[in-house]
Image (cartoon, rainbow over all chains, first blue to last red; front, top):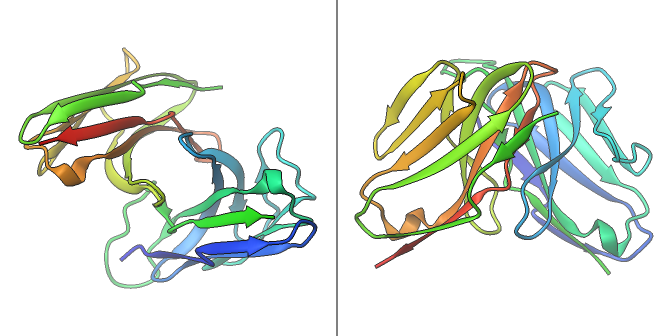
Length: 122
Length: 110
């Protein structure tokens, strides 16, 4: 249980285009989802926290108009990088915490991570 | 804010025991996590401590002292596949956010 699916795993795009990354909780209800960015050999930097049905809370220094987050349902959150530029190239990772929507145990407070999306902007 | 410190790199020998330390300063402590991250992959959960003491899970154990702002991850019977980055993360009561340390890159040698 507690599987988070993130797609795509790798995307290459031209500068100026927009890229959408999806994060889905497959077997639990993700009441909160987190979006991180990680540059090579650096730690995870939290970009924003989103709760289902409400606006995302962005960390200081993260442009909300550039990184659009939608958490429309208890199983899906999306991050759209608008007008991507080469400096946006990074590893983007989502994680989720929540409650079990079915049988099985879901450890409270544990963040379950998606596999990450490697974005390369040319 | 939160300050999390852990060593940048460690090296150990296959079959040995290694301890990775993490110190933190935070307001509103609500748990400490250890994650393992292999290069190019997402982190995977290893352990969670919210009360003082030792939590043991197979070859991995994690210890917490809230009064000292200190935790360690202990890896026993090291295997080559344990070569990875180990991230210490502190959860804050504010919206349940966790702040991650910079990670400790562990290299296990034969």
